[in-house]
Image (cartoon, rainbow, N blue to C red):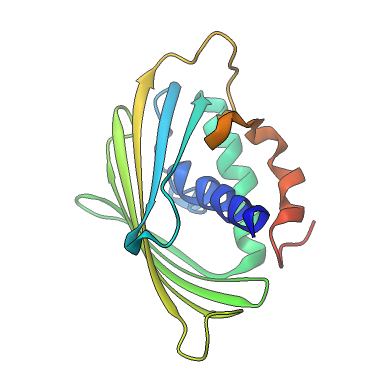
Length: 181
């Protein structure tokens, strides 16, 4: 269960944390280089809040978007994103390990100091029961400053201090049910 949550958290980070990575066609803005804090908050207290830190630069953000896009293309039958007056709106339909998820996300902020991603999803399949399950999550991202001396672009520090680099994201696909290697 924890491995599954970690995989989904990383997928959310890759798809939403990196400035909505699935929307490569729109050429979304890259985040300001440096250390970003990403706080994932699920409504209803279904899962505990998860906070990560990500050291990034322009190249890493673009690379992360390029890596996340093929994973989303394999798992998602719909990936629409549009620029709005307030930011971006994304609608997607994806399937992971026998669960179908329909999501709507609103992305606001400036990608230089802070941005917010508010996502509502309806999940069917797996253990959700015949009616499915509605979930909501907010990702609050804020720029903290320069990366720490022991960090390089792409480093993510997960809860509990586990550290990985997004350049290793392809290795993590094995943790995500239904995504081909």
